[in-house]
Image (tube, rainbow, N blue to C red; front, side, top):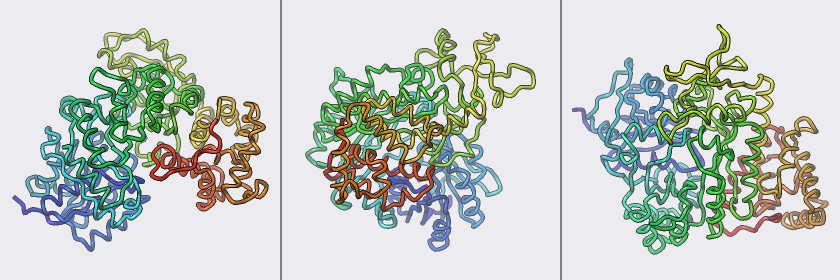
Length: 614
């Protein structure tokens, strides 16, 4: 057996949040006497990592691989292997694209990596030679090594922006029982033989210690629990947590749940329990406003009443609520995307404080990714993705009619695997004519995968390339201002006009302000507009007529968010208005998304209320 390794480097994409999973792995390595460090790369610049390799001389380099960052990570890993240093891969991309990962590393770990990492560090699993595929490691016992405490010191020292974030991140549990088709959790559950084999609870003593460390050593003022389904077990986990958290930690916290979990159960009321523990807000996914898409495309069968009643009850208990959703999915359209905004807009005062929206990205081996490829929406173009693809644009072609023509095809068909399934996942497209191509033909025939039904069950019509490009551009620009539109009363007419703005004056900042003023006047707020302008000007320390030109062109944008004058100053400080329109709106979305979360949903300091809150 080889000698135990002494030094290790972890590499991961730099993100707004601390790399909590890697911190746990780093903690495990240090627990076994290995000097482990983490290098976070920005914009695929691996030179800091290469420099650290030359000076630190590690025995091992580990990458957490995500689809969208994989191509660049592969190239960096090849360079490291050429330097004579073995490489280990982990992360979601290994689960779905194992073979291509094995071509660039000495080991690839599917699933949980705690025990596999410990065994690699101790030389129990020899590396594959560089000229051969790496060794695939899958440990059937996901949590055999226990749950190592995270090690934050080095990351906080080298990345002060993460140290100085007033919000710290903690896991109390891992695993998710639900079947969302865009997520890797269902695949993890299958891989391990069921949810019960994957679900893991960190000991409450350790959760408390971790939070106390974040509070006392690092000055954190709030905790974000990164659990997918916080408080899933009410009696065994949530009730003991409630008793100890407020007494021993006392920090406010934010968590994540499903709409189904917001209902009162015979075992207790999760919302009431987390509120009593000190929770101040939650993130809850809606994903679509269309019941057919929720049920058959996403496997999230629920009605609007369940969603709206849950958000409103949470808000009534004093919780700040962030909704999460994906637009431009298979079978979405301009109308379904608009309905998603309108669902949130109905709850803007009594349910949803912030609407978080991403654009669909087809991760190829997820169930929804398979729909994309089997039905002709897109070839597997994963190598085109960027880590931020879901904020940038849609990469698939889209159906002409949204769900209008597919729903009557699917509804009568039986679910091959029972209620937690859809016929959509057992269909494929074929060309209508010999020699056709399902990825370019505008109309294709749909068949069931099973040989027992050889007949055409329906057809699927796609947009022309010109129509698709128009929808992709519209969808991206819609997403750029979604947090603003969400806060405007009865927003439907304004949203439709903004959709059409590219044909009527352009997608410009000034035009957004002009359309918004027109809408507010139509809604009966003409008499309020001068006062709103003046309040914003007062906050900026100037007269309404003396506001900087871009702010004067669209003052309403800053009036709907907490600390609006400070947001306007942030836009000026970061040069948002100096950029060309497409880049300006992209930067607008990014800054506003962070502002809305940290000033409305999960504030760590008191914030001035929005000037416009109607």
